[in-house]
Image (tube, rainbow, N blue to C red; front, top):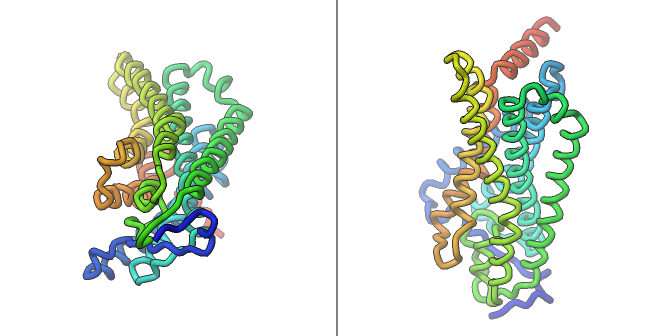
Length: 311
């Protein structure tokens, strides 16, 4: 049976989630719940540190606070619904599905942009240290952050508008744990070539282009670091970038593998597990990667603990 876009507002979809692993339902619930709680605690703590600690009022930590906030938003859009599917709360209305897809696309895009800006910030700090204060001034930082959020929320409108124009047939089972683009395309009776074209073109500007900028920035960073004569100087320079490089690899690696392939090459089951990495685990790991490998963040945290104990 075909469902036209005109009556989609009364339509319900059903998220399959990890129903194939029903016998591990309790374990999966505990893993995802604990990961979500760690993500909330870690990102809230890092966000509060960057806001309240004067020594962290620098461009690098301003963008880190943006990253923490978008991670909070991204994981909160996906994980609560994922936890519900583990206990047979699979139904999701068309409007809820569209809303989830809209915010997921927007927040994922913002994360791509923020990671790219952080790479550029490290490039300026390592390759043009004498001009760092001039280039990465407060106004520039605010404009870059505002552009990241604005562009991606506008970009998300296009994707969700195109989804709303599709017709859907048969059993409305979404082979995923949230309303993602590709699983919705699989359910459609309509021609999705325009949707896929938008992913490969306009999506390239939002995901692949920032990745290329990040890669180019790190090429120059590594080239500059290798020219530093002292070993200690090389270690110091690289330590300022290593945490960000780990996060970039985790996030972009899985996202590009999931989205930038032709539709016939998609494996929904494998992509489901790949999606877990950048929607569940990467937002949880980010604050710990930055805090454990960053002396300034660790120092600010210790100072906060000491001040709390004194009070």
